[in-house]
Image (cartoon, rainbow, N blue to C red; front, top):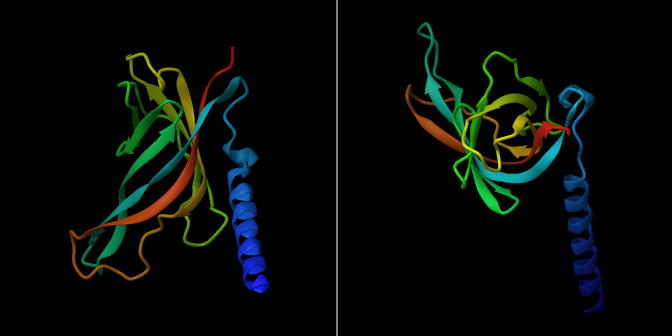
Length: 173
């Protein structure tokens, strides 16, 4: 009985240590926003990466990324993350990708995990949680990569579960 409780304790300690390491991951230099920006807040995301089966030039169908769909746990309110990419807080404030600025990408630490990103965003005019955010980092990703099995036909859609940490940056004062 003592051996079982030690094993259970060690397993719990290992899970805690793994979770602590996961929570302490930091973005590489390539994903740092420009000087003059500071972290406004951090949010944990859980959702899916949506892929659609497409056919190009008569080739076999393949999975093509379509959009994210996730719920983020942020300070005091939830944020929805969807196509654009866009983030919309419960207070109605919203940010969307600035299409004039390329997204910076670095590979995730493990195969099967979607890449880490730095995205320049533009807030809309509505005041609120997201109204001063200008950069979003996606780090500590788990899952979300397109299936390795090719689709059978064109037009099929699948959602692949993922989790990530999103770090929102605003100009420093």
